[in-house]
Amino acid sequence: MNTHQINVEALEDNFWKRPQCYIGQEYNDYIVVYSRTRDSSILENVNYETILETLERDSRMSSSSIDDDELVFDVRDSHWACGWVEYILVSKYASERVLCAVYEILRALSNYPVLCDETYSNACYDAILNHWESADTEDRIEMCDSASESIFAARRNEIPEGVFDYLSGCEGFY
Image (cartoon, rainbow, N blue to C red; front, side, top):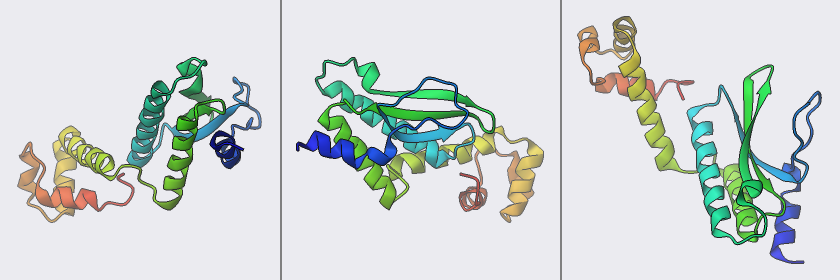
């Protein structure tokens, strides 16, 4: 048995399964690598983008008789509860390189939830800065007060260090 077959078998639990009451396109020969919803966290969104980028790159680098768009792609379906669900699909006929990458990604996520610490850290940093920049004065005053910063710091364009530290530690912010 070659590595390609081993990887497909190892990924068996991740094959697309038709959800109950589903009326969309079926992807029976595809592996679901990762998914996200409208309400996904920064971490989930960063992992999603990192995975999709990695697998698309590996797919382009592999020679195959199947069109690249059929090997690795993402799809978005409407969902009554969360608005939409988007997921990354990889054909079971993808190259050995791509299937090995899928296996490694899933293995890595089973041990540690962050695929790229630097990308995740940068995304969190940007989210905090964007939160500050988009907040009105009243919300900035509240953040300064919660972070034990002078409320007069709410007038500044740059985020006070104490507020940044406070928001960094807020559960649910990410």
